[in-house]
Image 1 (tube, rainbow, N blue to C red):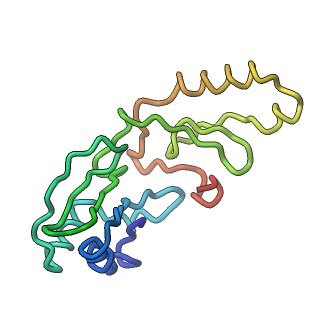
Image 2 (image 1 turned 30 degrees about the horizontal axis):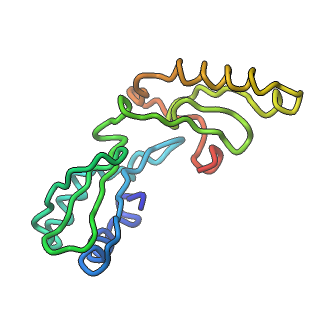
Length: 163
């Protein structure tokens, strides 16, 4: 669930409660402001505070080798709660993802503005070897961390990226 302050943040406790009965892993994801909407950001710390205020006082950390989520369990819960923190606690150092947009561009980072065209080159008959080399180059030039300082934002909305 992408948590948006004052939009769906009032549903946190309801989702967390599901883990008491069911072996679900509920993941709360910090909203990432792409073109606009930074006022919707609710950090994982704020989410945890809201859960505690709703009566979920003990979030027990779970050891996990899973991706980028910080995993917790409520006492006697069958499931777990995860927090994905792209804004408040960057995990760029461990990110191994690239993204192919809906219109055929390869992005080395979801939040970066860099894009590399693939669609037209593929339609023009790009060889598998050239495609593989282009993808390797994008991965090798992946930024070490995205930069949202000074109000920088991605030029595309998530809908236009394809996610």
